Image (cartoon, rainbow, N blue to C red; front, side, top):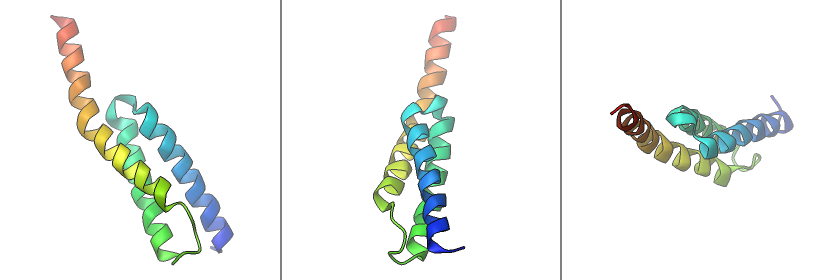
Amino acid sequence: MDDLEQQVRVSKMLGLGFVLSITAIFGLGSLIALILGWRALLIIRRAHGRISGRLMAWWCILAGALGTLILPPLTVLTIVKQLR
């Protein structure tokens, strides 16, 4: 796969990861954002500077990790509170 194809692939991954990291979707979107960010970062590192997107990849990783850790317990607590 040439650099342009790789760049397009990484850009699509990071675009989806960014949207999912913001919307979160009960933590599942955050988990997917975390995975996409990690995969994109690995591709970027292997390209040795020929592919951009490192900051967006880190955003997806950090926001995804935060959402994955915080949102599922908050969702469960909210549901339990509403059932009482």
